[in-house]
Length: 469
Image 1 (cartoon, rainbow, N blue to C red):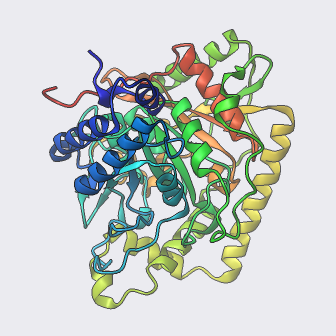
Image 2 (tube, helix red, strand yellow):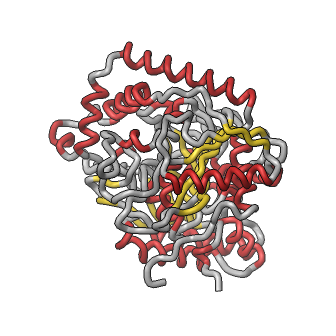
Image 3 (cartoon, helix red, strand yellow):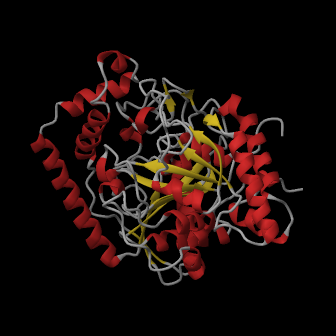
């Protein structure tokens, strides 16, 4: 028998509609799963069981009356502990954040979930201020991979990825400034979308500026489309938010890929050394796109690795986000974060503007590229999950997390929509992700192509079962 924790949000809602199960049952199941997985994977900063069950009971009554509150009424959700959630401290993975406070405001995406009746079951782990591509912090320790707890879940939205993969709520809100929803999605075998910048409003504004996106982390593309229909609308607190989308993302899912012009870049023109098992899994999925009617060309975008410019922007943001801390608070910071803050603080305004120039030119080149190709396909990452508790794989020679994430951060620079789709596993059973990228504002194409892969069986929505289940 299928467990409630194995179901997508779309299927849960269908069951509520038909009276097959209730929001209270689904919420209890999600909370029990969350409590069961926490000792092994450490996906949560806190669980909010009492509030969740109270909201679930209210939802159950609305469904009984045939008056659901919105598109997600009664669906258990989790929120990365970077985003404000009313009634719950947002500590951002830092001992330097005081948990005492009013905590009386929702971030825009959280507010939209609340308006649509979602049930908040907990806040998920993040590295301190979301600064790196793995999830460990001085505050909450190491978050581990659901497929192998000795490995990392990735980051910085690692807690969200592990929670979704293990069935502790089908939907989660993550943030992505250089790959932070796509990296853990790839390592944990789930779907995640970094939308076009501004499509999902962000407040308070991120110190990482327009690199930072809010995005859905879900079991499959259909759930992400549903979540985008809820959170992808403007909020007056974000001056950079886009106008409402022209239509519902869920309505555009079924168009398929026939006739789409797909560029397949296995290694960004030889710039990235990709592990053979990763390359093979991604190639097989690309071949499936061709079988489904896409016009696939193996080619590379005109993309020179912008890592130095990204570091200038990212490290400057880190320096800014910690600028208010006193000497004692700085001593509490992750040592790696202290290091990049020092580098960011030494950058001049001219250094920053030079990095912006690199970014603008990269955006121009990718704009030209998408005049020819509707979608770009790459591996999400060149590797699978490595040892937990480390910023970089042992023996890799990389100094920072950007050394092993060359496919993700360029598309934060360009603000394009990009998603990670699970397309297989390596010999150790660790998930492999494929990245889909489209031109700015074409989030619908990314979701459509990803949904086609799920429908064709080339991507998986199967949850991981926790030990002993």
